[in-house]
Image (cartoon, rainbow, N blue to C red):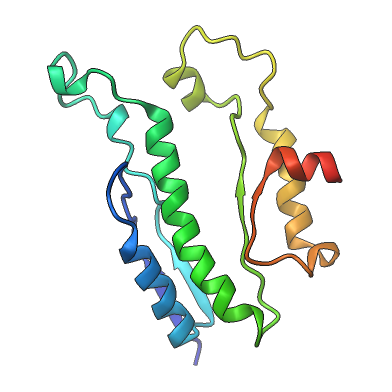
Length: 153
């Protein structure tokens, strides 16, 4: 029988602990499911909420803090798995930070910004494919950047 671990949308927020994701990572490492299904993502994105637009509490919110918080949550979960699986399995666990990418969300978050140097979504696919290939079997437990991978390959 196949064992599945389902992780819900974790809703990580800036300046909140990510201990729950370390615990979830340790649980996954201990239980050794055959499949991990992550339903959702790690980002809560309170800076994009519109329920309090025009109020003092809305002022000064930053999209980049939301992104950093979600990445920290993802890496907390990923690192536990990588550490536990590296020595006794062939499973590799890595994360990739795509950096700024010219998406619809970027245009909404940074209206009027000069986006001439940003990568298009299709341009960041190859680093992900590289990590899925046999050419990267010696890489695990790494938090990588698209820019760094593109420069190497």
